[in-house]
Image (tube, rainbow, N blue to C red):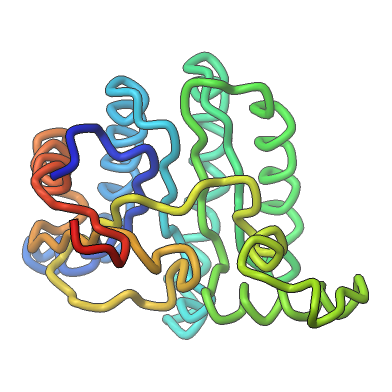
Length: 231
């Protein structure tokens, strides 16, 4: 049984659209409510001394959604970064973005770079946002960079490989939370979550709050993490 808080929590934030549909609202309204939840969970994670929080904001597969919705989401990311950056700096949060940036528009790339630069000294919480992210693409990119750097097969082990992932320097997640009741990983941190504890809740992301996060952590703390051993 784990007696401590998880050092690193990763969340698949799912259910914005279904939340809106249940209320006969537009999907856009669901995404806006999801942003409010995200802000709340970031602040609470810092308050309870979670050291690393990684959020799945937009997958590489999400480009398949209707163009209007994708455009709305990109604008929402831009406006959210503009609105929240000063508060993140004040709260001593370091922000990192992972994913293929070349697939994003110039305006959002500039905001991402600016946010990373201005929060680089944050010590309270490391917030990683997965944007245009895919776990398989991350592994492919790692292999390409290993080849580019002429790393021989004999030099490659798990530690070396991990250094070529987008998440290099960040410990693997202890706990992965997925909202909305879906039992799948959705191409998220495929290498990093090999030994993570999984927590699935039927709660849709806009309804996920501090009490729900506490419930997930309590469940995590009740588990016996053996990492392949028999103790």
